[in-house]
Length: 105
Image (cartoon, rainbow, N blue to C red; front, side, top):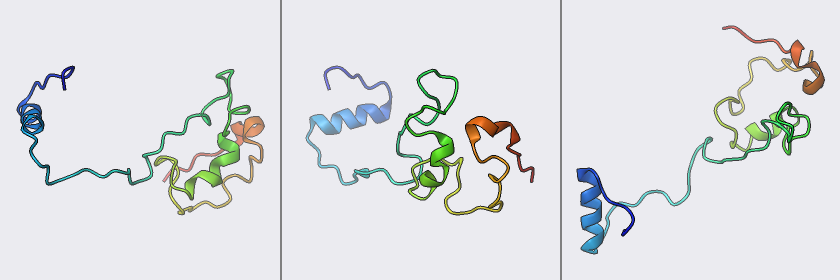
């Protein structure tokens, strides 16, 4: 750790443990767990930066495909849908996005 200098007590303790080759008894998870651990850019906008029509994973095409695999963050609940017909008024989100309604609970 030549390029990092600890600035608090915890950092100094970690550095001391490393320098003394102390055996660590607690290890963090090697693989992340949860719905917000995968970074998957591309559905937000296309190369023009204006719409999602030409994106590599357009939101309107992948809405149902992403929630089941648990990689899209908390904006889409996993498997719970109180309003199954929310998309009926807007079959093509790129063209008809103005028709989407918001649910006020």
